[in-house]
Length: 456
Image (cartoon, rainbow, N blue to C red; front, side, top):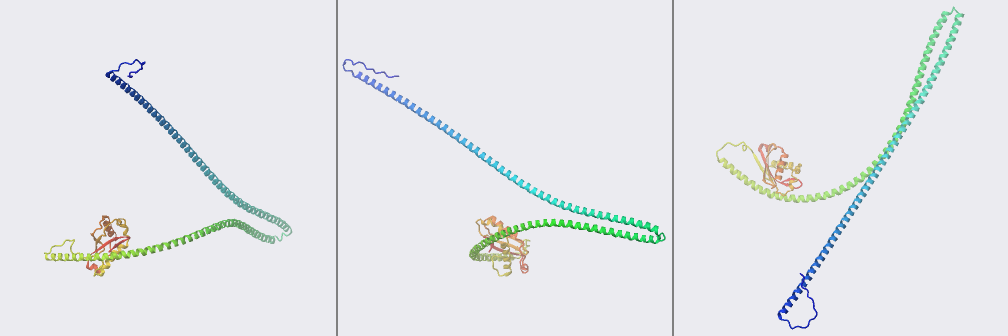
């Protein structure tokens, strides 16, 4: 509700001083009016702030909408550029494929053209050779025909001469008949002789002509064979020239290959020399390390052997005590597993019995020198304790038992050791003297794994 307006009135004549109540009312009215003015100003300021905030929000919305439209425009532009780039690349790829296809087609056509030219050349060469062969055969046929005609003409001339001779003889015969009938018998005889002579002459002439024909045919065959041989000789000369050219090229290639092989061999020898020097240095270093390791291992083995000997002595003492106790007891039937088995225990690398030491060393070498390390190579890389293993070998070389005095701590290594021992069975049989004294020898060794299996 609008505050009551305060209107100024024309100055009135002075009145008497207002009472205190009137002054209080006037002051209250003034305060109310001031409050209403302040509220109106605050309301207007709030309206202005709201309008300014609305304007800011509207401008922000317009700015966001403008940014969104700009982003959409840029995205559309980028998509359009990407589409154009894709189309350009596709066109370039299609053009490259087309050019490649044209190139391949051109290569194919050129290849076909060269192949057609080669075939035409071969065909022309074959036709030329066939024409030459036909020409040679035609010339030979012409020569044969000419010689045949000459022979026929000579035959006709010979027959004409014979006919004339026959006519002359007939006339002479008639004259002779008319002149000398008395001499008919003699003439007939002479005639018969003449006829026989003529027949003989005709036969000789025919034989000579046959010989002449055969000689002519032989000469013609010789000429044809000579022509064939000449053609074959020319062809062989061509082939020999081609072979010689191929041999020269092959010799050049082999020479180049030989030089290359010599260069490679020199490089290989140099590399081998360097590798040998490196390996020799590595071998010496490995030998030094191996010697040091073997020395340490031998010292350790000696200590272990001493401990094992002490254990063996203790075991022997216990076995002696058990034997004494058993001997003191009444005898009883023995089980098949324990009756009559003569055992010898070798718990180190030294023993008074040299044959047992030699047998144990042979047994160790069979395990160490064969390709048994491949069976344990991978699992031996695991952290483990060097196992102490007792292998009981029978006199025939078979294995009675594999016992772990000290396990490696890795079940896979223990299983691999058992497989290695089984893979090498049977071991050598006992020598006669050992077989006569012992049925089973128990060989105890510590197993080491580095680049091979080593038994100590």
